[in-house]
Length: 188
Length: 235
Image (cartoon, rainbow over all chains, first blue to last red; front, side, top):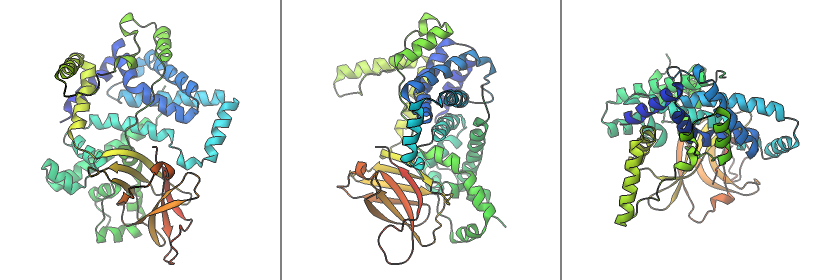
């Protein structure tokens, strides 16, 4: 059902790796807002988040030869760069009062209530990986995640045997789990 | 004998265990750990799609200048993608929208996004009003999610998922004010997934914190003070 989306995602990833500037612009259109949200949650400062977005895309383009579409989605690769940029910016800004005040204010609001930047990162990576799963795995997991359907309901909806649905759920979850773990590995 | 791998994956997604599975899981650290190992994937998969926040145009200008990009990508990519307003019944506007769609389809990369959008919009879904991840409080390792859906009948429903259903007593679901001074009980929660109707007049923005507590069987209707999971809805 979504094989079109998968192919187009692969087209974008490949075009980026091949150095097409329109692919950089498309990657920016698609991912800059999410990367900014992730940076904002980490840096707690809108102008620092803008600087981070700028740095991420500049680095991504300069080091695009180290990106391989076979190894990861472009989304996951950009998230890896974003992590490194945010870490280095946090380190260099740690003495600045606004960051400390922002962090203090956050702590007082009880830290477990603030959405973790890592959960934003995971969401970006997972959405991209989901579109790369083959069918019927992609549809099955989409129904499980987004519509909260049980495996029985998915089996009825997609007219697939229960056992098939169950094993696709397991295989899909294992693959996505592994892709999230890979995305933790340091990128440039 | 441990639970089947397929069953563990379903449990991680919050499906109800059979009595036999529940019995085994309660006493088996290995199977519990296996279910938990999917927690991150399930949380990310279930979390609401993020809107993101659009960087100001200078950010692209600076990237464009720093990398010496060509004139064809000079325009801020985020400024270009403003589609026509949603199709109205007015035929003139509809044909314009159709032209826009056709133009978008011509550009291969944008077509990908459009296909994705169409695929998603074909599936009828309740409108999600808010959603959050529920984080464990210290000394707990549960994971969960809370989603507020607007149902077709206009009522609001809170869907809670949680990676386990363990409690000393029983689990109760609360909506709490930001300063944690007032709260509303929605009811008890059994299993790993539960749905609660939100009272019609309740202003969610005054009670944005979703809390699952462990309540002793002591007849006291107030919050025990022992919270297992908590998260704040972004409204």
